[in-house]
Picture (cartoon, rainbow, N blue to C red):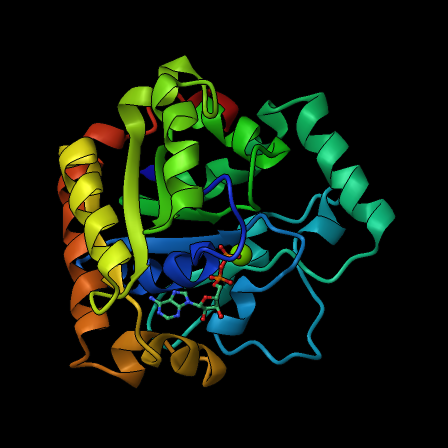
Length: 259
Ligand SMILES: Nc1ncnc2c1ncn2[C@@H]1O[C@H](COP(=O)(O)OP(=O)(O)O)[C@@H](O)[C@H]1O
Ligand SMILES: [Mg+2]
């Protein structure tokens, strides 16, 4: 019973892509996985084969008594996912306010998932600080920052490491993943080497830039199905194994009080 937040100060770095693919990879290691979309772009569903025309999601249901476990969709792989849903701006603002007004509301909605043994929730977050991340922090999540091997990612590192981005008490639970690394680029190689040294064991791994990633997404498949023997599938599998090893330390101990 653990919560993994896929976060980043920046957008477009691959949070949603990694959320979906790590969900598959972690599930393959024997966990029950639920991927939940916390970004109003509602893009996570597109990795799971949900029809574009389907606008359903949990944000529409905040005040209904329906359990979120019933709103989660099944996939052939066994991973379940909970779409944000297509909602208008006023509903997005309402959700934000709902999260901020009482962060335990979210923990209560998630409790039925966490009551199922060995469940891992993977939270696909919007870029930057968010009300969702703040509310999830109550559940002592593992926080995985998706970085790129570029100067913009280097510039946000001190803020993350000092605890000013996710909070002082999250420092112990903060990890990194370096995405879209292109070893043909000297700058990418240099930054990767630098981050390897700087982040040490908090760097869970690197994922190479590979066209198979957007292609798998366009085909609404995981890279494990679309390009099983690609190096990018091996990259993500290796990160999932590192997460698997760390999960026993990341148990949500307090969730029961919200059920
Ligand atoms: N390892 C990778 N190789 C190639 N393209 C990638 C890789 N990871 C992500 N992408 C692409 O980068 C873009 C942004 O990814 P996305 O997951 O939507 O980012 P975010 O959720 O952080 O905004 C997408 O087009 C995605 O296919
Ligand atoms: Mg995203």
